[in-house]
Length: 358
Image (cartoon, rainbow, N blue to C red; front, side, top):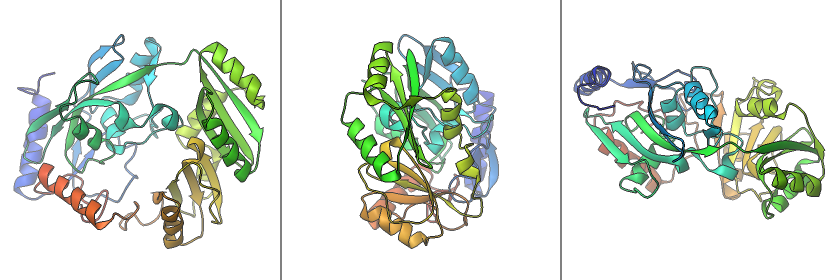
């Protein structure tokens, strides 16, 4: 779809230019499925849903290009017809989730440590900056690296750098075979098991420990899945696909049992032992992503995560006018501020959504 003489893009550009001229903040939003994520953002709504549609899809090349306002469910349905999928099992959190929201949030599901992050599959993007100019970065093939880092940088930027218009992403074939094993293990034993298996040639595509049970999903060729199932032991569970989807969408009982507390997301080296924190935990990604409901102070949670070589952020709940992500060092903060100034000199796009001063 050409950016020239496109009525939807022209309307978006007019809104951006008017906002820049009057220093009026814009709140970029698609389906609103992740409106709760990050700090509270205010401003005039810039709705992306009118700019929708799949621009191209090459199943043999494993590449799809779509507009930001395209519903994720439409993209996944088209991919499913060709036995393909979005690589890192991205969460929707609502039936209204959009492709642009997926990129802006940069969130990934259970398959993340075994397939890659959202940014790892972004080949190219088109962005409208704070001057109303459209810039294209990257391309549709991995070898085209012109501007590729900019495309990757937009994943997880929460719309603070500009309006993502469309993007090309790499997709993957669906696994031929899949099964899920369950083991009765303590948190410490589960962490040891996950790290032991990580060093072996096993077709693991997801792990989760919760209330004394470790679930491990195996995906791949039938022979590889069968061999791993026999060597690892455990018991197979039925209806596993729905369980993993509930984990991805955070509809498991764990995520709704303790609404009085903040839900922390800890990103840690997977070999990190269980942290000395009180509360209710759920562990994913082979130990690298840990969810926590706790009465411990934010300072203690963030300090322990940092000392372990990771970081902690508030995922749900809490005061969204305060900082929710892990504090940035002074050099990193300056880099973020310089990028914001370069792409959005008037500071109109989702100001403060990531950090107060960005």
